[in-house]
Image 1 (cartoon, protein in one colour):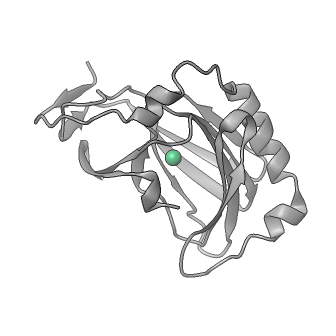
Image 2 (spheres, rainbow, N blue to C red):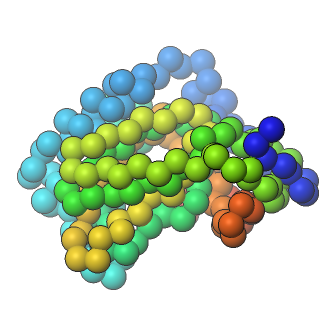
Length: 187
Ligand SMILES: [Fe+2]
């Protein structure tokens, strides 16, 4: 047992998840192939507006009805801890370098507001230019540009298109559900 729930609050699964439940959709390998091919499009990557004050993004058409994004990361920016609900995904670094901190444990999808992580569940990966990553359902991570000087650009794809993202705060080993974001929050 690697985690312990401490309180209980139901989280509803949206109908968007159900809508795609019967569709085979793109495989993780197809999402990976897409993000790699897109990141290799120098014209597309260089057309992303970059802002030293915050992240920038452009939505792309992913394969097989997936949701895709080109994202610019100024030095020192990050996502905070979050998950992608029922969606699988892939991402790759097109320029610069990103770091991913992830949990190697599956969290309960509902019925908790905070939980305590036991030792050994943290995974840290550095993704320099060209490095890619695919993940499955309920993947919990944060992505960061830890550089002090270099902007990073990355390409991401999710299937089904994200019905929601759960945002967490983390203090030591305690992970707390802070917010559930819906697509209208990031369009
Ligand atoms: Fe993510």
